[in-house]
Image (cartoon, rainbow over all chains, first blue to last red; front, side, top):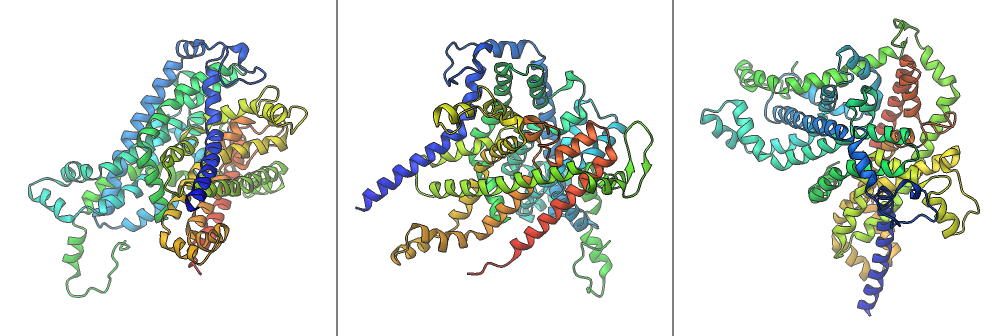
Length: 277
Length: 310
């Protein structure tokens, strides 16, 4: 009797979960399907999930015309550079806050922590004026600088890891004649590798998907990153959904790959953050 | 600055102690210098600068002019500001309970030894990690007024409507469409956090309740919900703050059209600053927004800190 109720419960459970999964995936399935449809079929009735005459023309057009390769290149350069700078700088901050006492330490730490609550978009106007004065508008490096400035969250994440390193380990490196920077680079960083990986993933995805600052700071079409290029595609080719979605599919692919590869760490990280919070 | 020195009552020889404590101060400053410089330049300075700008008339063309509280007074008298505030509140009031209810249900369904658990968890989480721009474009397409999938399902599939709805063209349905996207995108996150809370409940508690003859719903109400109260409040706080910050989906799906009727606080701030180049007014709107979010976070954090009572 017990097994029958369990079986029935499991059927219910799987049924509901599958329905949910369908709702979650259907929009993506439509994106992919439409990206293989020629223009005549993108708004066909009834809407078809499997294209009647699948075609690669949208992908060909996205990749060969419209500077799409350039946008992909811009996004890659900006996201990779920003990730590298963010990880190094936030690790250095976290290490100093975790291992050393210095005047002003708590004040600076709580200042960083406190501003994490300030919604990023509320600073965009003065940031724009500042970027204009520093000639960082319309520049890939300008994007990298601003993306790398958001280190507070990563610093907070990494600090916990650096605090757990036993002092003897760091001392023994010092005794071997290593300076503080060598100790940090050779001993502390390798020990924090899992946390650094998490920081790198979050920073990369954050920079790869960033929309609003790029939209504000970049005017020159040749410097567009993918998110603002997609928006441009939709406006310029308002009804060419096939092209828009071929470009979108290429743009989300790295995100999905990174997520599926690291999903265990990803979800674990999110979960542990919640339990601490 | 002796904030870092907790013990001020150390007598005898404080000097060598202090020197030893701060032995690495120079090194520490060198380590924090680059990150701190960026933080000061791009967060602290803008925070102060924005405050000053909010008291000026600033448009990038003419030199700025101090106008006192005019921008704030203007905001309070601006019907679009109130409309944007109302839309933001509506969005939050729809998406927060929506995500919590669905996320909790999904978490309850997954909080069992299921073979496909990791599979479902991953699928549900994919929208969370996907770019807002891409999902907003997809939903714009699905909500298409003539041949969109959603109209087709409602009309030809379920026969709930007899003619197509111009979803993104009418303020009411557009707000509903944007909120639906918000729920769809956020359920996975809510589910994962609820799962973390559920997994911290020891199995014995449920077994004891089963022996006492409690049914499913009673168990949820008397055991699960009280035990995950902290998790629930954590989710509530983060979703509310997140709901207030809705921007990209509105910007991409309607752009505030028609006639600002679908504007939320951040899109209205953004269009004032970067379309009408009214940077002073935009700054005042930013500050009002930041104060609202701050007050909301504070209120909810107080709620979070309250001890759990059984």
